[in-house]
Length: 474
Ligand SMILES: Cc1cc2nc3c(=O)[nH]c(=O)nc-3n(C[C@H](O)[C@H](O)[C@H](O)COP(=O)(O)OP(=O)(O)OC[C@H]3O[C@@H](n4cnc5c(N)ncnc54)[C@H](O)[C@@H]3O)c2cc1C
Image 1: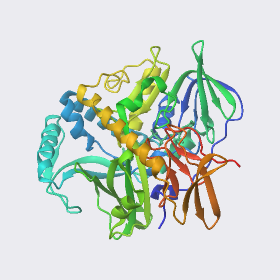
Image 2 (image 1 turned 120 degrees about the vertical axis):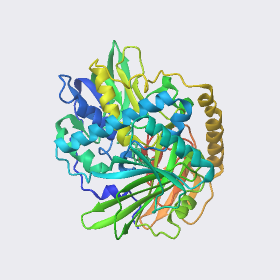
Image 3 (image 1 turned 90 degrees about the horizontal axis):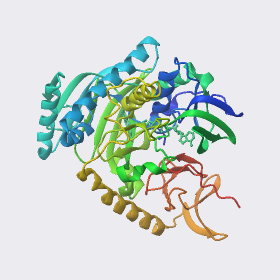
Image 4 (image 1 turned 30 degrees about the horizontal axis):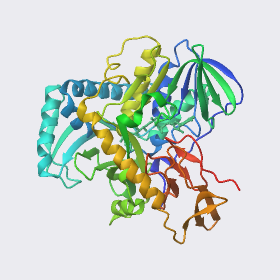
């Protein structure tokens, strides 16, 4: 069994590392689908644009997605509940993003296993049948051809089915974009600090300074965005995914609207066929025992790949894509609500239009300054309690066993994981909000259950909100 995403089997190359000071018009931070799409949309403008990525492009959340490219998304149910007008505009944005992804793939002959499939949104709970009916009506009223049906592959009582949706291999797509723009991309180049002086940004990367007029933060969780108060408007969700070889693939992409969340798609890799199955999406602070969650996913299935992934879920289920400041020079793309293939592509379209002062129909919908209603605000205390609970559990969670030991060394709280290579010691404190860490025995990472930061066994930060490592130095 491999404890990584199936997409990480793909061979990759490394771009140059930033090793000099630079002056540019636009600096993009983060080489996931959002950052690379933004670079792609700006590459033919006359603005000098570069992208810096702390690891390898695409190896963040994008590499662990199920990579469906569809507008039939479970979150539409929630957006529709809040506002049918927003839901219609959101639907149009997703269809535009799908068209754009298809256009890029076709025009550039990108070999990324892009395949047309039917998308299903389904339920196996009687109490949710009405919601599937609502989605059916909603799609009909938006002139989308939709069918009421059942899905043979999974237990369900009703599904809405649409066509003209897709699946792909996210890292093959990312690799093409990266190769196409490699002279503007700097990998292994981490942003440590962003200062604004006299209307220009001075960004510290690998101890060099990049001066820019615009900055685009596409780091998944926008760590550098303190005044925006993202934790008040969102929470982080973790999901568990497995892939295994099967005899045949089916041309479907499906997700339910129930709890536990279930999602399925297939993937054909040369002459091997795989099913990719997601089971359970939970607020990260409610994940509890990680091994139990993987066991529940893997029960009676024997997956050959197991991994987890997380995304930022906004209180109104719409992404935040836009500028933070009055002069529109500090831009952000985050909160994709587990639909970042389309919303990452849209980030490129919207942010490029904002920078180039062009019109775009989705600027207001995704604005960082949009108001959210009382119900959405009231989510905050729930999230805060959950985070506090996770914090308290994490500080008491120092249960030693044969492989994981928590103790103090030189007055510092440390966590130790022992394997055949010896001891791996890290600081037992997430740099973000000082929560204790739990060991993820499947992916062999240290995970923070308060806000979702993750670290390798030796303490390198894999995912934010933390932007710092937890390496322990004797
Ligand atoms: C379980 C699961 C399944 C999903 N399945 C789907 C799906 O089927 N379809 C779909 O549309 N979406 C899906 N998504 C959502 C999608 O995967 C994400 O929304 C999307 O990949 C986020 O892209 P990103 O570019 O914002 O983030 P990332 O891919 O994480 O990119 C951010 C990059 O920023 C870099 N970075 C961070 N800090 C710094 C720094 N200080 N300096 C330099 N670089 C930095 C990181 O290394 C990273 O590479 C899924 C999400 C989950 C959780």
